[in-house]
Length: 127
Image 1 (cartoon, rainbow, N blue to C red):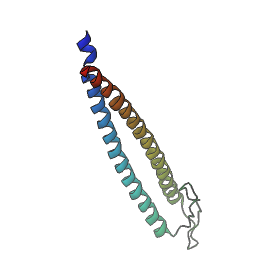
Image 2 (spheres, helix red, strand yellow):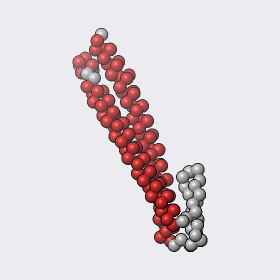
Image 3 (cartoon, rainbow, N blue to C red):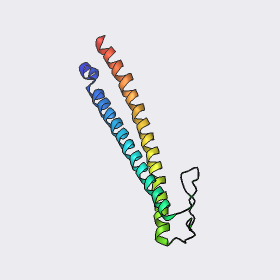
């Protein structure tokens, strides 16, 4: 019974799993950031090609103006494309915030499992 209580293998396995999850979340964050960069650049080029006036607001959400710089009225599909691109960038920003929250939670759990329980168990085993 005492031997089973002193076994730190379950905590060690949890610690490794939490480390793996933290690394995977880091990789997901890098990928999502790259996707956001590509989408932002694509939308910027679409706007330049169409000559659309779209000033940026602080939340990365452009104000949609249905006339181009050239005075041409945009059709529905063009407006839809621009709005979809804007919505996509906003969604990506929200996903990055969620990934950051998950990464912080994993790091907090890793710290709790790794430092407190394993060190305490090792000290108990030495006594």
